[in-house]
Amino acid sequence: MRHQVNAEINRIADRFIRDQSEEGSWQYPFETGISTDCHMIILLRTLEIDDEAFIKELVERIAGKQQEDGSWSLFYDEGKGNLTATVEAYYALLYSGYRPRNDPNIQAARRFILANGGATEVHMLFKILLAITGQCEWPPFPIKIEVLLIPDSFPINLFDFSVFGRTNIIPFLILANLGFSRRTRRSPDLSDLFLKKENRSFTEDPEARSVINLIQKGIHGLKDYPGNLRELALYRAEQYMLDRIEPDGTLCTYLSSTSMMIFALLARGYSNTHPVITRALQGLKAMTCRIDGELHCQYTTATIWNTTLISYALQESGVPCTSNTVQKANQYILTRQHVKFGDWIIHEPNLLPGGWGFADMNTIQPDIDDTTAALRAIRTLATERMECRQAWDRGINWLISIQNNDGGWAAFEKNVNKKILNLIPIEGGKDMLIDPSTVDLTGRTLEFFGNYTNLDFHHPMVKRGIRWLLKNQESDGSWVGRWGVYIYGTWAAVTGMVAVGISPNHPAIQKAVNWLKAIQNQDGGWGESCKSDIKNCYVSLGESTRTHTAWALDTLISASTEVTPEIEQGVAFLVERKEKDWTNTYPKGRGMAGSFYLNYHCYEYVFPLLALAHYQKLAEGR
Image (cartoon, rainbow, N blue to C red; front, side, top):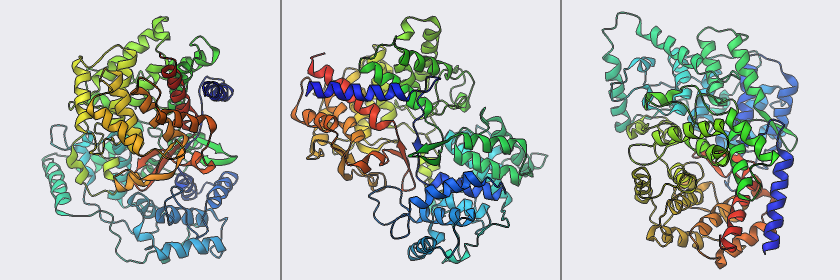
């Protein structure tokens, strides 16, 4: 077995060395299905930009993903196709002009849509795009744009929303309040897909109404302002977007917020060819990648995340920090540390910049996960080079200061966790409106502090993090992660607590270990379905994947003093590469429940490399 483990470690490491770019980064795709490809076609056609070669390539990729029943799905085991994805594809293919309405595949898609409720049943975020592009009426939205003027002292204000929520909600508020709609000479007619006349996207149950009433009370308090509140709010919204445009022209490096910004600027009177819109489009196109030769519009790039994880994993597997590969990677990482203030300063006004972001062009929106990953990667250099030590100290300071008052860590900011905002009637809002402490971020942050800063459970900050994790364990022993669901969350929690000195014999850890052993597949691996995210309980994929197996295996290794049969079986699954081909492309990341899933193409290599490297240390008694 040891020989096989060494061979697999070397195989993965060699692949990483070959795939590294000249600048030192790794640019593996960040895949999000066909949704982003569809949205790009719709955006380009609405702007009347005839980039035909680009659009044709996107059409081919979208069309190639259609299933036999005419639908498109979000993941392999979804069952019947996904209605929203199918309407997205149907609309984009028709709008492209390269698939006529009488095409048999288009007709099959139409039949699926009508048989499953029609376009009125699509996810709210896509229904907004249908309204923007003139395919349906704007559904009434109960919140006025003047909400942006409510002062920070009010119980609910703009900066109580997550930074991801803000960057998408602000352009939406412009569009909804102006009722912007634009059709073009190419626009297809989708009216036959709307089986219901009523187009309501925003529920008004009593709890939602109470939040809306509170917001309206805040707006009413502005009535004594002498100017035009509506126009001031529109101006503020526009400036918020313009002030947060990244060097590549995108709004916070997200395709969704950037495309919404473009539409919002059109609503404000900008021309199709205005330099800000042209630069934004160039930024979106620069984020494209190729997957098996096909063009794909990424939601954002994962370059910093890929590079920090891979540099760390290579060092864990025995590649010295003095190697050319690691040196180049870490130099790239150092150049991407943030020096600008972002919105996080609102919640921690005395804090200096020092975090890292997710995407290559991200300069103002750091996150906790990328910051810990970057610090893991540069940890050895920090003891040898002054500029690296300064980066290390700034990163550590930022990370410590961003801990939430409840003891956990969130994704982006501190204390953006007012649960009342989840009552705002926006579909999928719980995944975008607030940024609460999460198991995966808290666990991984503790793991970093425990393994790389010598802090343990005696430290008050660490103690509060442990307490938060223990409080949030599920009854079956698992933990649920924000970005990867149950196996991922359990891996983060257990490895984090063990790293800061919690005994593997602790009842919570033993309960988690027993849960993982109980869900191990007969082939020795583990596999979790995206349905876990929808049903809010663990759902087996029915097959094992390399990524889920690596997470589960690493968890068992961290909680063991010797190699167990379950660990041996998991290692055998990885080194013998028993996985089915389709599992490699199965989403392992959670974006928005029921509508948005993430496939990080580096995960199939980086997490098995880490797990096998840790197995080697356990087997050798290190």
